[in-house]
Image (cartoon, rainbow, N blue to C red; front, side, top):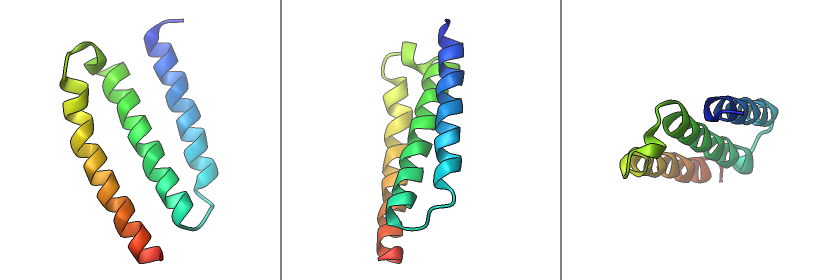
Length: 81
């Protein structure tokens, strides 16, 4: 199985997990959805855009996204708390 097929299957599984979490309310579900969003972004950037093969680029793309998602998660904890 080639890398693009593996990435596609990973995204399929992550999308299924997102759909299963969509009906759940609460802080844990919100944080899980944000974590799934980060994993999907990493799969797309690393697998489809091939940033995994470019030294430093995957981390450079994921760091600001991780900070942004962490800030959103913190706001979710405050708002839902």
